[in-house]
Image (spheres, rainbow, N blue to C red):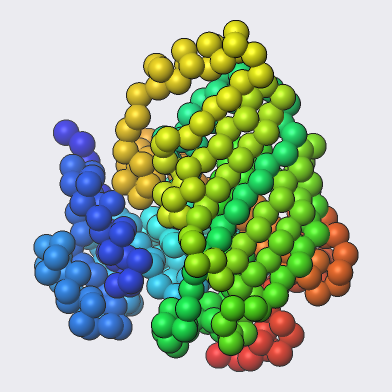
Length: 365
């Protein structure tokens, strides 16, 4: 009989999508308690998803011995401390993006996990599990893609004044960054998921759409460690919202749909250079068996990781790769120079990419 894991959820915003993912995995998870400072939304989620307990005190979740997992779906500035408490209380942890506010915090969490062997922390990158992207991964694994040349990624969404009416949004101290960190990070994780880590970035960033502290438009040129190149563009000023990923390899071109929030899903197109190679690609794709995607699939794989005591499907290193790109992009924007990666402890932004005044203010909170 499959072991059910018990989850305590913290948050009542994006947490709704987590709860839907757990709900599609009823044989694997149950959620007995939800914590949120927003009582109206928190109690509404409890009623909608049949959660028996509501609280505003997160510490009560860490103190319980009947929970296996703490699910953190709170504003970014709270992530590190909640993750730390979760691991130190003997729980596994799921945490929404962006994971933390610096590479230093990622590395510190790695040391914390070393002190608690058997505990697993899984960052959220649910877009990886769309069938379109999974088909590309399969073709690469089968050796049908060939040498990578160029990737282009567009994250062109719309966020107006209503979006930033939420007090913690648009501010360095609480949101920790702008569209590069909070919006395009999923698409940029998909770049790392396909090609591995980045090697160098040159970036322009600007605040053009809304009167906020952080960037809402950016253009990046990236060298990958595998030798290929990438161009990444992000704006929150696109009245027609699209997300698009296009991967050019020697033997095929893979292109996503342009739906802004489901770009990992089918139908992707895979175009080969010859009829013979197209036939080989089509044969492999015809045998592909689609499954669950998004949060549902990521949570399913996390259950497997816990039960089998293996690495989670998204690791701390995966989160580090994505945050290194953000860190390097911010440094490039401020210096006007290409910025190499990885980001080591001697890098000026290792401990924080926040502007100096914001970093000092956040450190005193």
